[in-house]
Length: 202
Image 1 (spheres, rainbow, N blue to C red):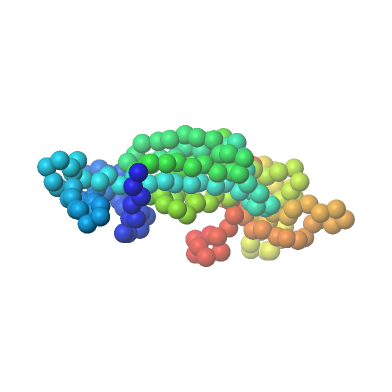
Image 2 (image 1 turned 90 degrees about the vertical axis):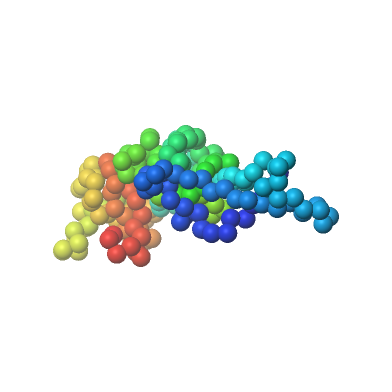
């Protein structure tokens, strides 16, 4: 078994959904050197080109506690347009091996607000694709915020898509619990997505 170090960034490979002429999986000529004896992939007895395949890891964590979320179904749309469905393990991880390299899309079909129409974006490679979509848990207090007045409203139920909310983990003796505060945005009924402060569109 050979391990290949891809010379570029797999995120720059053009996936099926962006390629006018279809996805082209990277292939390479190669040279084998055994104790100074060399053979090229273009030799008559060689198989020709090396087809590059990659791995991908997806990890789902709780929005507030940062704990791993196990047993959720995840559907991964691979760079060549094919799909794989699997289940997150006890560590909230799904690992895919020997898949076409490049950008991927993925969603959790059993989580409200996560869908094929609004997938998360990722890429193949050694770094895990992190997701923080999570359902509101009973131990959480959620307050909708009015960004014009700065007021907080605990009466918003259910949360409507696009509603900005503050999420407060429950702490005994505090009413309402005020620390820590996580600002999030509702992506669907009962589902939140952590705010990325570096994203100007937030």
